[in-house]
Length: 164
Image (cartoon, rainbow, N blue to C red; front, side):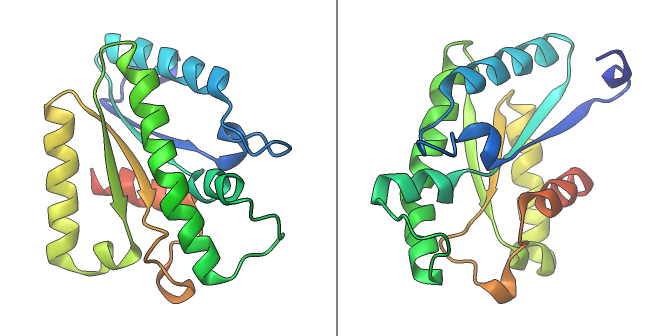
């Protein structure tokens, strides 16, 4: 962690495979608690943290019992809607144990393409950070279609890092 000293803001990208057990479809709560402890340690060192997190579709698949390997767009969007609330609640719960407030920020590629929406997203993230809140960012998969998707949260995390 010594190499992180010089950075004020750190974007942490979390993939579905870390958050969700691929066999059970359930949240890896022990892992998420460990992440929360790492975030606390970084905050103690005066870093501002943004988390870009996948996992909503994976959690929603389990809740809706969608077992097919590939989902239709509407099924993916429904799974994202159901899973996103579980994901946000999980982050809120593990961070609250450390007296840290979490915020859910859902974005689409269109939010970056539109200058006005980009500036608004940036202002929101900056305001949350100034209030000592941890933004939990995810693509808004409930409205994103194949043509207007980031595709994976690696690209989204890179965009968030550039934005703030």
